[in-house]
Structures are given as structure tokens and as C-alpha cells.
Length: 441
Image 1 (cartoon, rainbow, N blue to C red):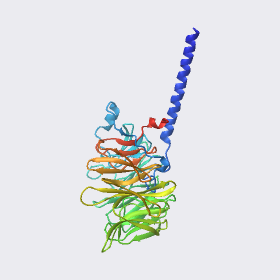
Image 2: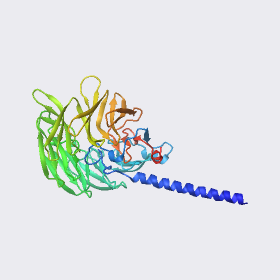
Image 3: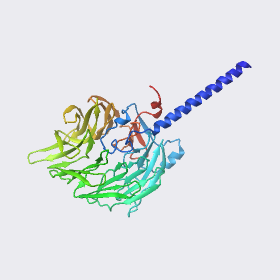
Image 4: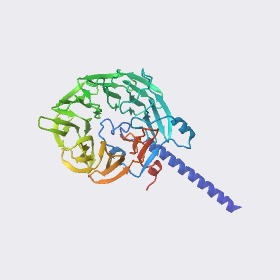
């Protein structure tokens, strides 16, 4: 039976080859999950919060991927029962798994349609559990940090167990919270306990307080840091026409410099990129009220300013053909339909291009290697708008059929754009399925 023997031998060889191919593909798939660009563990493309995701490649717009508990999976449906969704964007830890902070006072790890664990925040005097009050973050070991509305910073391990809790203050109805800033050796939390005065606190990853700084004015919603760990923040009186300040802190919390911006309310967080610090504000004098984009050098000296015809919602920095690119997105306030503008500037504030959209732009644009994406809304319509870095519109990916979402995006290590659902447990992504990333076409 030589023919049958040869057939069996060939069959076994084919099976071994298939097994090796599957093992190789599995290893490649596993490796893809673990690859992450520098600072991919934070929002806004790292501690600088520059909106630059060029290290991760380009944004893709092939499909919308919905990751929700599967109805044919009784375990995932049981774990998701009663969950009403997230109150903050997801914190991606791979292109499969994310952390979510839920509206019932829990943090959860969510992956592949399943809630793998959930960890509770403490309950207040009224019996309700605390909720995340600002954007959370992770460290490079995938531990989760959450500043909650009970005035405490929670650290939760990647296994779902609480590592520590650091209580800062007792909140009031006027309390303001800032997004967490993760650094190489700790997490910086910012807040205004009374809505007037500000505080920054740096906690080491073991929960000990490294330093604390108090300010006469309240910090803006978020702040940034450079590669050396120097922190830049805006302090505001929250009054148009007052003099707000841009402040730089050294890694040990000491003040390096402060720059007052006369008659200007600084509205957005500072952005660090292209060797300078960018921030927008509203300047008001007796005869004029205008939106202005400011650029300072790293020592606090103003380099240039650019009057704008719209209110910026966000600033991002990147490069285009090797040259610095500054992208500003915002919309004009007033009666009628919203009109949004997206402008590109060079490092000296010279306008390179502009695009106008009949919609309201949400937040900061995101810059990748080949394109720029921002989120826009018009009535009930929601979309992710793609454009080239030379200012040419490419296309819009509609999210109008998605369930209610938190419209602040996150970006994972594969440059998928993620949104958390607010009415149910789940994540919506714009990008490619993992298997597509393994194929050469």
C-alpha cells in the first residue's frame, strides 16, 4: 500500500506545516498585542498631551468595530447585567483590552466583549459610590489610577485589586477636578477644592506624596509635561478680562517661572511641541474681545501670538514632510448653524491651510503619520472626520448608528480610535480588526 502510506505521510506533513503556521501567526498576533509606541499609556499621546500619535502609525478608516457583551455568551452577559456604561473615555491597554470607569462607581477591565473584573470605589455618606471625576490614566505596568469625585486618588492593579487610596480633600459643589498626568515616576493630580484656589499633588506609584503645590488661582482642566518631567499649567481666574498665568514647575514641584497673560482668560490646556508651549485664550480690552493663540518658549518668553476668528476647542502638534505642523480646531459661536474651522500653522504661526465644516468640532484634533482626525457633531449626527496633513478633506466615518458614546476619543497601541458607551457596557472602535493587520493587503 505504498500509495496510501505516501498519502498519509503527505497529510501529516501538511498538518505539521499548518500547525507551524498557526503557531507563527499566534506568536505574531501576541507580539502585535504587546507592541506599544512610547507613552501610549496616556491620553493625548503622552505626558505632553500634544495630540501627536505619529509613533503609532496612521489612523485607518476601514470600519467601525463594536465590542459589546455577546448575546450568545451567557458568562459575559451575566457579568454585564445591570451595567449602565462609562462616564469617561476608555483607557486602552492593548488593541483588545481597555479599562472603563463606570457610572455605578466601579472601574472595570473590558476585553473581547467581556468584563474581566470590576473594582469598587468607596461609598460617600449618602451611600452612593464615588465616580471618576477626570480622565484616568495607567502606568507602564498597566496599573490604573483614578481621581474620583470624593476627592481621592485610587490606584488599582492590573488584576483588579486596589493597591492604595490617597484622600486629598472633601469636595464641595464648586470643586473642580483636573485630568491625571502620568509621569515616569508617578502621577500628578490637580484640583480646585473651592473652585477658586488650585492645588497640584504628585504621588509616587506606591502612593506616597512626593510634593504638593498650592496656587492662588484654579488650574485649567489639564496640564502637560516635557521629557524631563517639567510641568506646564495654566492658572485662571475664570473671568474674562482678568490676567491669567502660565506656570512651569520643575520635576520636584518647585516653580521654575510664571508668565502673566494680561487681560486674557486662558481656556484650554497648554500643549508642548515643536520646541514651544502653545495655549489659547480670550483677550478682552475696552474696545476688543478676541480669541488668541499664544506661543511661548520653554523659558516662558512669548514668541508670537495669532488672533483667531473662532474659539479653539483643541490644539495638536505634529510634522508634515519633516516640518513642524500645528493644528488648531474650533468653531464660531453665535446664532444659526455651527461653523467649525481646522487650521494648519507652521512653527512660527504662519497659516498653511484651513478647512471649514458645517458642524461643531469636539475637542482636540489627533495627528498621525499620514492624516488628522477630529470628532464632529451636527444635530444627531456624529462622525470622525479624516483629512490629510496638507489640509485636504478625505472622508467622514459616521457613528450616528452607534449607541450613546462618550465623545472624547482614546487611541490604542495600534492607532485604533476608541469610544466608551455611556448607556451600556461596551467600546466602539474606528480602525481595523486584528486579523487584518496580519495580512499583507
